[in-house]
Image (tube, rainbow, N blue to C red; front, side, top):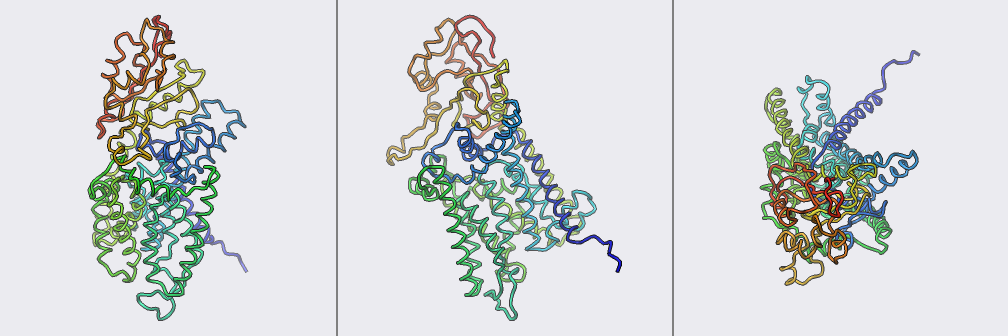
Length: 585
């Protein structure tokens, strides 16, 4: 019998999906490696700095780590990367400057992989719930515009998102939480996908839940909850739906799996945290105690109840906001068990529930609801595909929404707040022993955690910055009047410099005098501050100062924090600081 020359369809399917994933991965790698801006301190201080400290025994551990509020699970991923690359660098004897650049880039590459998986499973989830060849038809638009006519916009909502481009490849726990949550949602036993028995009832699902997929979903969900304990809100909502719509027999199985996976995850995480902290710790409980009981989260700002509605969701969705709101209203207005819409109703309800609960908390940040963005993209794309418009109309509308995201993505990743990134890059490169601009110490007169730290600058020279420890353990009366170091500095910069610093280094003065005075800080080789302080610093140092401006970096056109307005300015200590004339370095 003559063998068939037809290719195996399974091989074709694997080849196609592999090509799709690596195309997405290439896009996210480009995304990660081209970001030049700063978002929020947690990108460094809750992930990279603890990881750097684990491997190289240097770094800035914030108060959360000192009080055991954080699990080591997330930083451990980057610590493994640092450890591996450090070993390889030593093995192949990389130059120190090359090694530094490799260690800076490596976490971004890892996060790009996580971000690509998030995009990939967003499309798979959409295809699984709402059809459309697993959402892959739209990917062919990458190669040929003529396939736009086939629809399936699922993946394009994800890769065309300005906020995803801005945040998904940053090393926030929220970014990894978002990707992990999406994977867990893909394996979740959605009602219409459960294998039903003949004559099944309309409300209670009489069918068979895929046990392996349920276990996978719960494993990823557990990891997401370890990363961010508040992620439990998503799974509480979906879990209640699943329990309600399942038969008595299936409820027992579901609860058993939840308890088994949950306990296993908690035990493994507890062991990891014990290994890191040296004592048994349960960070979620500490997190609740400090943020809810002691209300320390308010110390970092409070927002009105409508923050997520008026600012959070619009910032996350940008041009996709109208279709997302239409999708939410549409799915919530359908019967919970109507054929093909049960998952949509549950996802829409979860978005509303989680947003409502977060709105009750005083301290709000729009990255807290970031895990809801893939859900909103799936719902939006599903409704967009069902619009009764002509195909050509939908094509141009989709292209228009994505094009509107491009300038937002470009400005947020290339322009706004780039100076605080450029300055640490410059410090890292000029800290090399062979560099003529070599420095031995640098100080930051900036709001706390305004730049990256050791994981960005590496182990060259001494570094100090203004602190911002919250009022841990203080009474309610003491908290009202409490000011951290950065607040005290900005309340009266000249007075702070007079009391917390030695005599300013000036021409004709003995430079050793400033080293002998007992003060909180010493004047460094490099002094970094925002342009908003320029006149104050110049006035305090005086005309005979040994400092002079040696570098200036554009940071932002405007800023909501008046302390961070203007360029990032670097003052360098003059060569020959004993009083003779010299150049600035």
